[in-house]
Image 1 (cartoon, rainbow, N blue to C red):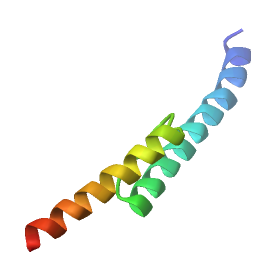
Image 2 (cartoon, one colour):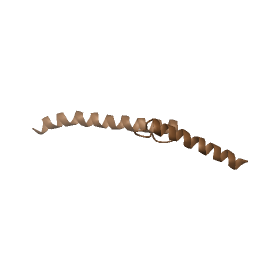
Image 3 (tube, rainbow, N blue to C red):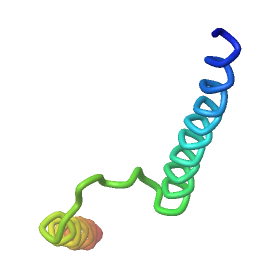
Image 4 (tube, helix red, strand yellow):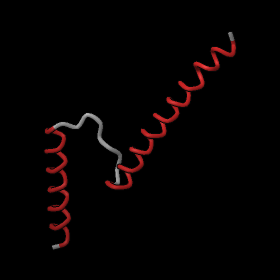
Amino acid sequence: MGWVTLQAVLPLGIIAGMLCIMGNAQYYIHKAAHGRPKHIGGDVWDVAMEKRDKKLMESSSAASLN
């Protein structure tokens, strides 16, 4: 019975490990490309607020330089 269990669990462990590796690879590639982790569950409102915040930061930094 132990050998049958090992034969079933070993492939499942390999599959689970590969899924974890692929998920971490996506995380680190996105973080390297964009400089920050991916925002999970971002919708149109979140994108609009990010654009607004970026515009406010740029205008405040331009005003402080003058």
